[in-house]
Image 1 (cartoon, protein in one colour):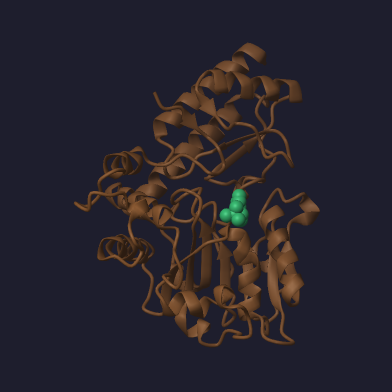
Image 2: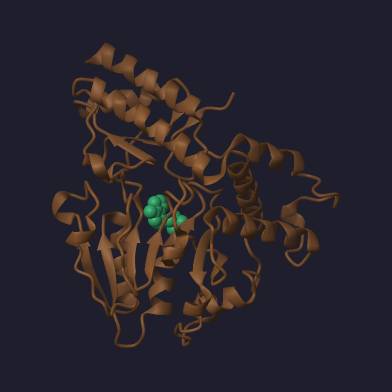
Length: 360
Ligand SMILES: Cc1ncc(COP(=O)(O)O)c(C=O)c1O
């Protein structure tokens, strides 16, 4: 029996995507071998690679100037690649600081170029995302960077700031594909696959070809977007099995109502948990401002750290894994990405109600 997996990443994957991989693990597409064993130059692999790209293009409604790239090194490598490619000599980029991941992106940008913090929520302990009118944007910035969902603090941008002619870049590692968005608004968006889109090993980067043409070129080959763009992410050996799994997950998204289907299911799941907080008479507390609460990572505190430890332990004994908050903040967290079934959230909600009744 499968457990309910609330880990923040790597995270639960759709059963249909795993079962397809299981069926095709040893003999795939009539080749008599696994996709893992197949040349990345073969027509069979090429079909999977391009299907993953077309599914992402269709789901996100990308325009002709936007290109999907598969790059290794995780979202963390994008923290460095982005400024290396797009901050011109003597230029600067704007960053919105909403916590750990934004801060890491800022640190990397400061190693290779110059960036400035154009706003954030540090003064509030990162318990919210800033509103558009609180930002101080530089019209000459190379781009504006934000983290759409803070996996650790459980905050999420529901509306994105209008950055005018300055390209908007988003780290969407923990909420890509959670609902329909106007993806054409972005100069670039990127996401490590291992939360909402597949296993670890590949980072999805969606970037404007017209922007790549203007990128810095005095950087190592593998760190240039132009390299990956001109070779359709096949300059060197791609993480083919991860991309195959991403394709399986995207098929599942498509078969389950696309992004509109994901939004309906994700809103219902998060609202179910937030209702448990409200009905608990203060037993469960969300540290996050209501308007900034994440639909992907629901973070909460219990009255004491001892009760939190007991909650996590009993959850695990009841086949609910990963309910411990990030080690940097403590508390509890339920990550309920696209693939988390509504039934899993219902099981968790009932467990929480029962736990509060017994220990409140
Ligand atoms: C929002 C966000 N950005 C970046 C990362 C880092 O991703 P990776 O481990 O793929 O480098 C994470 C990982 O949890 C994340 O949650």
